[in-house]
Length: 454
Image (cartoon, rainbow, N blue to C red; front, top):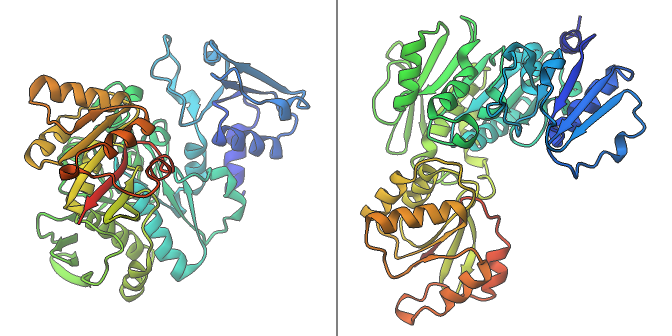
């Protein structure tokens, strides 16, 4: 029996619904049809505008769209949930054992070949860094998961020696039955509370990355994170633990001080990494990502000299404190991949001389007190708030503190540029060429642009 057969045995003879027909849902449909062309199958999606023209020739397919698409889930033996679907809001009970996903099915078959990476922030950087190092050394390495590549799309590229680096979101981890052989838990902050209803539920979803690990599996985790510490103490799992820390010297795992990283075992130093010349991952927060990556890479046989070499050649991710350009003496940075206050604070600390900050976007119900408190103690001269999240931060600030003159609430980016260019010369911070084209060319998520006056 091959590992793909493990997945096929789970699917065979089941009445299945694919819940959500975005990129992953389409991938699941194609996978099932490749092996079960005549299996009765249902696709369900909230969007009435779902393009199902390519499915019309499938006589064994039922399509449910619009309101009520999720009202009969108990009629199915297996519910293949995609990450964007929220089952926590259902008004009726569905047996969790019926719920699966690409991530769950993939791990049931291939978990022993997977390095899984999760955390509220840093998982994309860490996953990409691990992939870059291991692929440079071993070649037979694949990056998949939340990074944008569905697991079923890579499944036929895998042989028995392939290492799969999997970026895993809380949504992908929510209904797991198996955990990766090597799991990395970077940090836990409030996020996606609109989906999980509480921070506790969100944390428990993240904890699934280690919940089902066996005794010989490995958990790499942030020893400085209070939430992770409390979860591990309360669950008392048995597996191999490899912690990392920026706050204390560890006898097992990794710790950092200044630009140095030390790897230890049984209180003895195994390796030492000098990152003084490694400026491609700016900010002390990235030392956590680097320590996690080093520990994972060493577990699969990578040598320290090779790891260090490829650490230095890694290029940072787009939209992560990404330098956009300099216009009339003003440097622009795009940090739009950040989705939580803590990531914004990390960017501000890294860049240091931030003069103007544009923040906002979709409001996921998280608390913004930590960001407001930071900006009170570390003022940024000009702040533009946009979108529902920006409005809530603006309103909370206005209710509790004096509102600085150069704090603007505005959703129209063309108007934002006009407001900035009208600012008196003393605080003129948008005097750059083609301002509108610069602003609108950037992806709008959490932190659209940070720019610095030198």
